[in-house]
Image 1: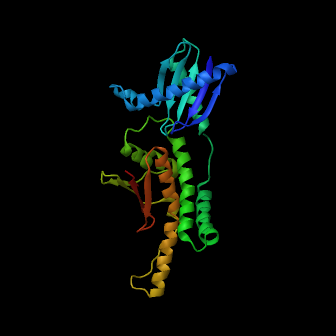
Image 2: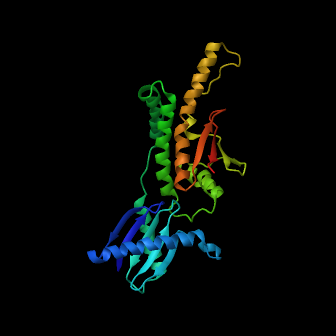
Image 3: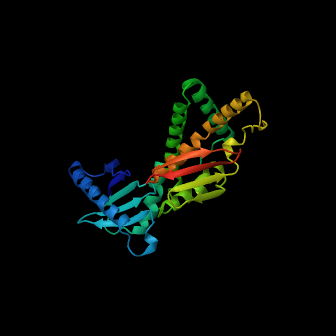
Length: 108
Length: 172
């Protein structure tokens, strides 16, 4: 189940952030999104030695916390889409194909 | 993204925009009119680049981004690619389009070389008017590149219609 979606601009300014649980958890989800921005920057600046992942827009699983999985997507214009989900057996391919195909289209 | 737009409407709209800004809004201040038109182009380029880079993998360096502008971006806008790209590998790029779509309807001055001074000043006015029409595409290029993280300055040069060249200087 997706608990939080965030769209962050190219200067790490939040453009849209929406959580889908009770109000108590909302702040914690905001913190998780904030931390994941650092992970995104790290992935972009220190690419792994494997070439094909260097320029991909979909960044994959950013980091797993105790209850959540966080996925990231980075466009060419440095707009970041962050998705936090509690579904522990979701696969990367599902997230990439289902969600991150549609969401950037809606922005444009 | 199935919306369509009429090319001749865009052509007429742009001609009218230049004419209105130069003759009505900023009647005796051509620099201000030019800056406003360029700013409009900047907004347009900013948003268009967001739309056209969506599916693609990210660019590894400036040259890749410029090549994107020359090929895909120009193709989406004008149904053709840039004809010639030159660079000095130190941050300056010259994009040459041999038949720029928005200039094809503009008349070419056939005045002789040694006309009277009156004719020469009329020719100079015409040249100034023609270059006004290029501020909008310069703005589009600048907006697109800024959105891709490359601050730059863009200027245009028309020595022989309908070919024109855009000079991009990347700010270090």
